[in-house]
Length: 124
Image (cartoon, rainbow, N blue to C red; front, side, top):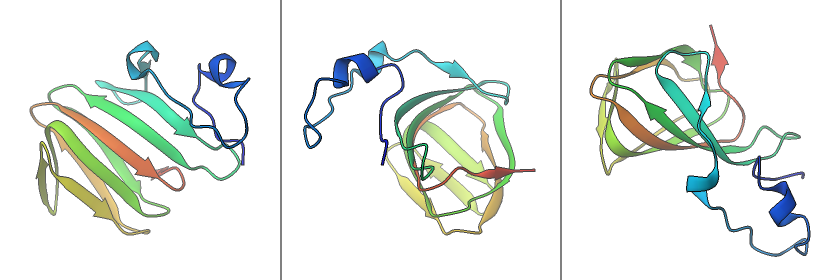
């Protein structure tokens, strides 16, 4: 595995293989995505497997278009809420979706979400 935190490679390079990797989340810049009003911070990723932990900021009214979860997706909503055709997950709550599930996610009032992915989503 080549797990790392983008932008933190220099700080982590001298660590032993089994050392903990402490991540200053504030120091990681937000990255724009292809979806208007949605930015991300990649906290950890493994490019060999697709494993990712991502902090996602969705502006009020932002929409994550139609997509399928190729593996289980786990989302902890820290602020705001996420809405789809099955319901709403609000701040402080958690939702997980089985591999193969498909939906469009909306953030009517904005959202900050910590997401855990075994593989990237497939977008249509």
